Each structure stands twice: as structure tokens, then as C-alpha cells.
Image (cartoon, rainbow, N blue to C red; front, side, top):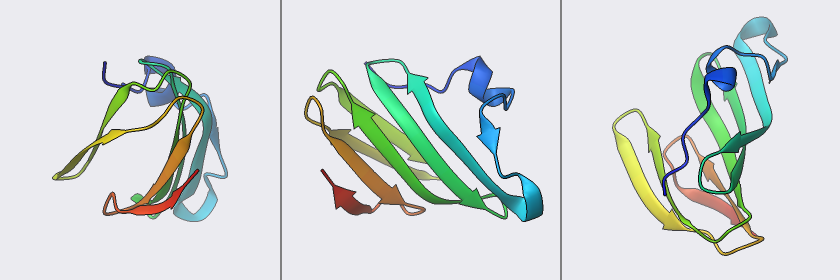
Length: 89
């Protein structure tokens, strides 16, 4: 299963700190048993943290970049705007 951002997130109901082109999406649930936190500035991804509660495979897409990753049950991974891992728990 691949996580997909829900319509609720698209509508921006969970957005915080929208001033000055900064933004944050916190604790958004995604299909496949994932929870996602995203931070951006000036419309560009700064960091995304994906937490897995099931250990399913995950496909990340941002711009032209696509990355398939496996996140163990109960673990998380943080990637930067190039989908490079910067932290893994």
C-alpha cells in the first residue's frame, strides 16, 4: 500500500504557520498506516517525517523525485527536500 494525502490535507484544515510562505502539516494520517509531518518554506519542502504503525512499504514523491522506502513498524524516517534521509528512528 502507498500512503496518499487525504482530501482533508488538500483543503488545508491541518495547516499551521502559513505566514510568510512558511507552513507545517502535523500528524496527518495517510493510507497504509502512516502519519506524516511536513514543513515547507516558500512553497518548497524543507523536511518530511513519516511514521509507520504497520511496517508497510512507502513511496515518496516530490517534484520529479520518487523514492520507495521500507519503514519498520513503530519507526520513522525524516527526509529533506531531495528525499534524502536525514534522520531515522
